[in-house]
Length: 239
Image (cartoon, rainbow, N blue to C red):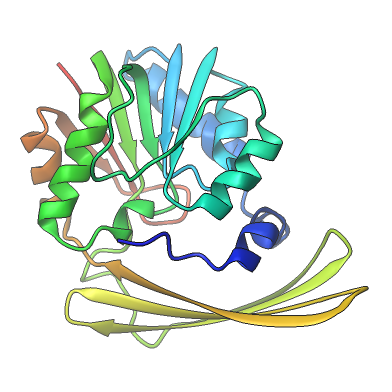
C-alpha cells in the first residue's frame, strides 16, 4: 500500500471538501456522541489515516488528548502546520505500535478501503484494536460494499476556495474486488492554472469481512447504516 496522494492534492484537500459541503465538525461531534451514548469514554482519541487533520482538529474540541497517524508524508506535513501541539505519527495502519492506548480509535472517510485484501484488513483493524483501552471504542467508516458500489458513476464539482477555483471530475469502475476511482483536478488561481490526476484503488470489502476482522481483533461490533458519507459506520468495543 502506498500513500496514493499527489503533492498538489494535500494543499487543496481541506479547502475543496469544505467548499463542497463536507462538515468535519458535525461528523466529529456525531462520532463522539455515538461513543458516549454507548457508555464509552472520550478522554483520549487516536485518528488513524488522519490525512491533513481535518477530523482531528474537531475531535480535539471534544477530547482532552488526541493523536494522529498518517502514511502520506505530504498530508502529514499539512496536518503538522495546522496542529502544531498534537502528536502526529508517520505510520502504516497495517502495522504500527505507538506504545499508548486510547479510549477511542477512529478511521474516517473510508480510508480503510485502501487496504488490499482481507489479510491486510485483519492486520489493520487488529493494530487499531491493540491501541484501545479496556472498554475502548473503535469507529471505522467503511468504503462501499460490493453490492452498494455503482460502477460507471461520475461525479463533478466546481468550488471556490482560498482565492482559487477548483474543478474535480471523477469516474469509477470495478476490477474484480477493487473499485478504481480516477479523479481529474483543475486548479486556477492568480498564478495560473494547474491540473493533475489522482487514481485510487479501493477494496470492496463485504460487511461480513469487516465484522469478522473486528471479532478477530477481540471486539464486539455493530454496523450503523447511516454515516457521514452514506456508507455507514462500524462501531467496535474492546471488552
